[in-house]
Image 1: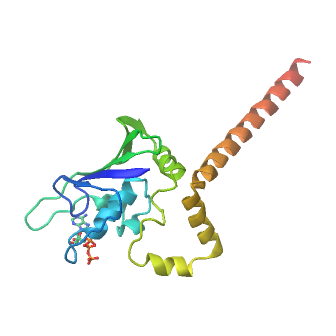
Image 2: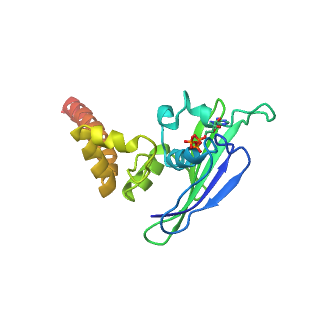
Image 3: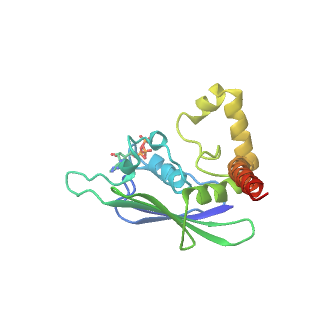
Length: 193
Ligand code: ATP
Protein backbone atom coordinates (compact mmCIF):
# COMPACT_ATOMS: atom_id res chain seq x y z
CA UNK A 1 0.00 0.00 0.00
CA UNK A 2 1.23 3.46 -0.93
CA UNK A 3 0.26 6.51 1.14
CA UNK A 4 -0.18 9.43 -1.22
CA UNK A 5 -1.90 12.30 0.55
CA UNK A 6 -2.80 13.38 4.06
CA UNK A 7 -5.44 15.99 4.84
CA UNK A 8 -5.93 17.38 8.33
CA UNK A 9 -8.50 19.74 9.72
CA UNK A 10 -8.81 20.78 13.36
CA UNK A 11 -6.36 18.01 14.32
CA UNK A 12 -4.07 19.14 17.18
CA UNK A 13 -2.10 22.19 16.01
CA UNK A 14 -3.45 21.89 12.41
CA UNK A 15 -6.46 24.14 12.94
CA UNK A 16 -6.77 25.22 9.30
CA UNK A 17 -7.27 22.51 6.66
CA UNK A 18 -3.83 21.35 5.51
CA UNK A 19 -2.97 18.94 2.73
CA UNK A 20 0.35 17.16 2.33
CA UNK A 21 1.45 15.11 -0.61
CA UNK A 22 3.48 12.03 0.28
CA UNK A 23 5.88 11.37 -2.57
CA UNK A 24 7.41 7.96 -3.31
CA UNK A 25 10.60 7.25 -1.40
CA UNK A 26 11.78 8.61 1.89
CA UNK A 27 9.87 11.53 3.40
CA UNK A 28 11.49 13.86 5.88
CA UNK A 29 9.61 16.45 7.94
CA UNK A 30 11.71 19.34 9.16
CA UNK A 31 10.80 22.36 11.23
CA UNK A 32 11.46 24.13 14.52
CA UNK A 33 10.60 22.55 17.87
CA UNK A 34 6.90 22.41 18.55
CA UNK A 35 5.83 23.17 14.95
CA UNK A 36 3.81 19.94 14.67
CA UNK A 37 6.13 17.32 13.16
CA UNK A 38 5.12 14.61 15.63
CA UNK A 39 1.47 15.66 15.26
CA UNK A 40 1.69 14.68 11.58
CA UNK A 41 2.90 11.17 12.39
CA UNK A 42 0.18 10.91 15.03
CA UNK A 43 -2.42 11.95 12.45
CA UNK A 44 -1.34 9.01 10.24
CA UNK A 45 -1.58 6.59 13.19
CA UNK A 46 -4.90 8.08 14.29
CA UNK A 47 -6.62 7.73 10.89
CA UNK A 48 -5.47 4.08 10.81
CA UNK A 49 -7.42 3.45 14.02
CA UNK A 50 -5.15 4.28 16.96
CA UNK A 51 -7.37 4.03 20.03
CA UNK A 52 -4.97 4.74 22.85
CA UNK A 53 -5.07 8.43 23.85
CA UNK A 54 -1.72 7.93 25.59
CA UNK A 55 0.05 7.12 22.36
CA UNK A 56 -1.48 10.31 20.94
CA UNK A 57 0.12 12.14 23.91
CA UNK A 58 -3.44 12.95 25.02
CA UNK A 59 -5.45 12.44 28.20
CA UNK A 60 -8.61 11.56 26.26
CA UNK A 61 -9.21 11.04 22.55
CA UNK A 62 -11.07 14.37 22.22
CA UNK A 63 -7.80 16.09 23.11
CA UNK A 64 -6.73 15.61 19.48
CA UNK A 65 -9.26 18.33 18.56
CA UNK A 66 -7.69 21.79 18.25
CA UNK A 67 -7.96 23.18 21.76
CA UNK A 68 -7.75 26.88 20.90
CA UNK A 69 -5.11 29.49 21.58
CA UNK A 70 -5.13 32.99 23.07
CA UNK A 71 -6.32 34.30 19.71
CA UNK A 72 -8.32 31.39 18.23
CA UNK A 73 -11.37 29.59 19.61
CA UNK A 74 -11.27 25.79 19.96
CA UNK A 75 -12.76 23.59 17.24
CA UNK A 76 -15.68 21.16 17.67
CA UNK A 77 -14.21 18.43 15.51
CA UNK A 78 -11.02 17.02 14.08
CA UNK A 79 -10.78 15.18 10.79
CA UNK A 80 -7.94 13.35 9.08
CA UNK A 81 -8.14 11.92 5.57
CA UNK A 82 -5.55 9.49 4.28
CA UNK A 83 -5.49 8.92 0.58
CA UNK A 84 -3.68 5.73 -0.40
CA UNK A 85 -3.34 3.31 -3.27
CA UNK A 86 -3.54 -0.37 -2.50
CA UNK A 87 -1.30 -3.06 -3.98
CA UNK A 88 -3.92 -3.78 -6.65
CA UNK A 89 -3.75 -0.12 -7.78
CA UNK A 90 -7.17 0.83 -6.33
CA UNK A 91 -7.59 4.23 -4.70
CA UNK A 92 -8.48 4.27 -1.02
CA UNK A 93 -9.81 7.27 0.91
CA UNK A 94 -9.95 6.69 4.65
CA UNK A 95 -11.56 9.35 6.84
CA UNK A 96 -11.64 9.49 10.61
CA UNK A 97 -13.58 12.27 12.31
CA UNK A 98 -14.11 12.97 15.99
CA UNK A 99 -16.68 15.40 17.37
CA UNK A 100 -16.85 16.61 20.92
CA UNK A 101 -19.25 14.40 22.85
CA UNK A 102 -19.89 12.13 19.85
CA UNK A 103 -16.72 10.00 19.52
CA UNK A 104 -15.03 8.86 16.32
CA UNK A 105 -16.58 7.86 13.00
CA UNK A 106 -14.82 6.30 10.03
CA UNK A 107 -15.50 6.30 6.29
CA UNK A 108 -13.76 4.37 3.55
CA UNK A 109 -14.36 5.60 -0.01
CA UNK A 110 -17.46 7.47 1.20
CA UNK A 111 -19.00 4.51 3.04
CA UNK A 112 -19.48 4.45 6.83
CA UNK A 113 -17.43 1.63 8.35
CA UNK A 114 -16.40 0.38 11.80
CA UNK A 115 -13.03 1.08 13.42
CA UNK A 116 -12.33 -2.64 13.13
CA UNK A 117 -12.82 -2.59 9.34
CA UNK A 118 -10.26 0.18 9.01
CA UNK A 119 -7.75 -1.65 11.23
CA UNK A 120 -8.18 -4.79 9.13
CA UNK A 121 -7.61 -2.94 5.84
CA UNK A 122 -4.26 -1.68 7.12
CA UNK A 123 -3.30 -4.88 8.95
CA UNK A 124 -3.80 -6.88 5.73
CA UNK A 125 -1.48 -4.43 3.98
CA UNK A 126 1.17 -5.04 6.68
CA UNK A 127 0.77 -1.57 8.15
CA UNK A 128 -1.40 0.12 10.78
CA UNK A 129 -1.40 2.40 13.80
CA UNK A 130 1.32 0.31 15.45
CA UNK A 131 3.40 -0.34 12.37
CA UNK A 132 7.13 -0.40 13.12
CA UNK A 133 7.52 1.67 9.94
CA UNK A 134 6.25 4.68 11.92
CA UNK A 135 9.20 5.52 14.11
CA UNK A 136 8.36 8.12 16.72
CA UNK A 137 10.57 9.46 19.48
CA UNK A 138 11.62 6.79 22.00
CA UNK A 139 10.46 3.96 19.71
CA UNK A 140 13.93 2.48 19.13
CA UNK A 141 14.57 2.18 22.89
CA UNK A 142 11.11 0.58 23.20
CA UNK A 143 11.96 -2.08 20.57
CA UNK A 144 15.23 -2.91 22.33
CA UNK A 145 13.47 -3.26 25.70
CA UNK A 146 10.44 -5.16 24.29
CA UNK A 147 9.45 -8.56 25.68
CA UNK A 148 9.57 -11.54 23.26
CA UNK A 149 5.75 -11.54 22.95
CA UNK A 150 5.81 -7.82 22.04
CA UNK A 151 8.55 -8.46 19.45
CA UNK A 152 6.46 -11.26 18.00
CA UNK A 153 3.53 -8.84 17.61
CA UNK A 154 5.81 -6.44 15.71
CA UNK A 155 6.93 -9.23 13.37
CA UNK A 156 3.34 -10.33 12.81
CA UNK A 157 2.34 -6.79 11.92
CA UNK A 158 5.27 -6.50 9.51
CA UNK A 159 4.29 -9.82 7.91
CA UNK A 160 0.70 -8.62 7.41
CA UNK A 161 -0.84 -11.41 9.48
CA UNK A 162 -1.90 -9.35 12.54
CA UNK A 163 -5.47 -9.13 11.14
CA UNK A 164 -5.76 -12.92 11.33
CA UNK A 165 -5.99 -12.76 15.15
CA UNK A 166 -9.06 -10.51 14.90
CA UNK A 167 -10.63 -12.79 12.29
CA UNK A 168 -9.90 -15.91 14.41
CA UNK A 169 -11.60 -14.29 17.42
CA UNK A 170 -14.63 -13.38 15.27
CA UNK A 171 -14.77 -16.94 13.88
CA UNK A 172 -14.54 -18.42 17.41
CA UNK A 173 -17.40 -16.21 18.62
CA UNK A 174 -19.52 -17.26 15.63
CA UNK A 175 -18.67 -20.92 16.26
CA UNK A 176 -19.66 -20.66 19.91
CA UNK A 177 -22.97 -18.99 19.09
CA UNK A 178 -23.68 -21.64 16.41
CA UNK A 179 -22.91 -24.40 18.94
CA UNK A 180 -25.38 -22.83 21.38
CA UNK A 181 -28.05 -22.67 18.66
CA UNK A 182 -27.43 -26.35 17.85
CA UNK A 183 -27.78 -27.31 21.53
CA UNK A 184 -31.07 -25.40 21.69
CA UNK A 185 -32.24 -27.13 18.52
CA UNK A 186 -31.39 -30.54 19.98
CA UNK A 187 -33.35 -29.67 23.16
CA UNK A 188 -36.35 -28.62 21.05
CA UNK A 189 -36.15 -31.76 18.93
CA UNK A 190 -35.92 -33.92 22.05
CA UNK A 191 -39.10 -32.21 23.27
CA UNK A 192 -40.88 -33.18 20.02
CA UNK A 193 -40.01 -36.92 20.35
P1 ATP B 1 9.64 18.68 18.66
O1 ATP B 1 10.60 18.99 17.54
O2 ATP B 1 9.89 19.51 19.86
O3 ATP B 1 9.47 17.22 18.95
P2 ATP B 1 7.27 18.80 16.98
O4 ATP B 1 7.54 19.62 15.74
O5 ATP B 1 7.26 17.33 16.83
O6 ATP B 1 8.20 19.23 18.17
P3 ATP B 1 4.63 18.48 17.99
O7 ATP B 1 4.98 17.82 19.25
O8 ATP B 1 4.09 17.71 16.86
O9 ATP B 1 5.89 19.34 17.51
O10 ATP B 1 3.60 19.67 18.24
C1 ATP B 1 3.43 20.26 19.46
C2 ATP B 1 2.52 21.46 19.30
O11 ATP B 1 1.21 21.02 19.03
C3 ATP B 1 2.51 22.26 20.58
O12 ATP B 1 2.67 23.63 20.25
C4 ATP B 1 1.13 22.01 21.13
O13 ATP B 1 0.61 23.12 21.80
C5 ATP B 1 0.33 21.76 19.86
N1 ATP B 1 -0.87 20.94 20.13
C6 ATP B 1 -0.95 19.67 20.51
N2 ATP B 1 -2.24 19.28 20.70
C7 ATP B 1 -2.98 20.39 20.43
C8 ATP B 1 -4.38 20.67 20.45
N3 ATP B 1 -5.30 19.73 20.77
N4 ATP B 1 -4.78 21.91 20.13
C9 ATP B 1 -3.88 22.87 19.80
N5 ATP B 1 -2.56 22.68 19.75
C10 ATP B 1 -2.10 21.46 20.06
